[in-house]
Image (cartoon, rainbow, N blue to C red; front, side):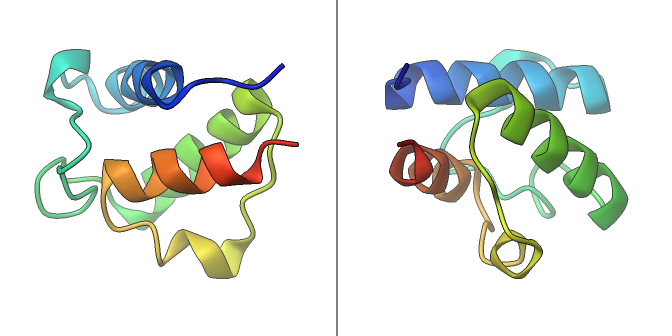
Length: 82
């Protein structure tokens, strides 16, 4: 099953909210994981792992550093769906 970008964003927002305690509605496409959401590398790896399971995609470790914003992650997951 392929997810829409809106469903991916909502799912990521839920994951980030659970991991950080931030409200899900603060997780917007233009937000930077590190600068705006204050997510460190350890939390980011947890978020990536949960997102991989939730959306059935693989996000290689060397790609994670390229996912600067929530929108980057949404686009990557959207493109990685089979």
